[in-house]
Image 1: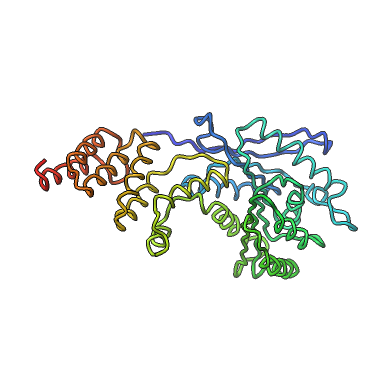
Image 2 (image 1 turned 180 degrees about the horizontal axis):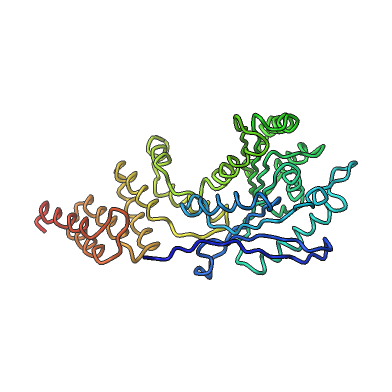
Length: 371
């Protein structure tokens, strides 16, 4: 029975010159981090790590296990007894001051470089906070080059003028950003009202580089909304990354304007690389989903292109030869189809494609064409 590795959090103490104190952090690495020595990973920084780390890390592990998001490194920062000082801002200009200014620099100038130095990190990073720490992560949005690509605000307790500052930063951003905020119908009344007002302002956002998401969870209060918001935020931020679902497939088939199914698949993976700065092989299930669309719409030239892609991406699996065999069958070239199926027979199975199925395909050609 194969051994399944479950990642255990690492507990570390960081000696900070900026904070002039030690700060405890937790780190969860992806399950297969040690076995994938060349792979880099997005990083999710969790403020209030003393209580937010576990729900975030658990959701990241679950979503990445099912490939609904990339594997990621999760870093939690313990702020017990320090969060008020860590998030303090000036009462005249509402920017970080004193302990808040120190913590701002600690995260950006000490902790993030340390994580980048010690672990294999991709350039895609996300910050998560709750109420006053949610407000705080937005200060990184105002830098000329924002430190984070994604901002998950859980019932944020926004400082004065923060609405306009966030809106302007997002509206005039020249890079792709993801911004999520959540409240609940039973949230603290002042926060719920303020977040609702903020969301109404964000409806005017016109910058196509920015992906903005909002949830107002019915029946959820200031604390239990977190359990719903974290998976919702991750699902939304990594929507393009997930495998093609049955819903996606049906939308694709029903869309009369979409006829270039192979291009749809290529575009999806180009976006994954561009948005998340990750290079991944095209999933075999996605190839099969697109092949079903191509066959249903009888776009045989696209099937040939898809077969070549499958062979390039997965040369040891039978899917490339199988699809090329189907292509030659449809083109009325049984000898070439039979040759492809024979090549497929010697390779690794994929989903329903196995040796028995390939034998059936070869027997059918012999019966139909006398080959």
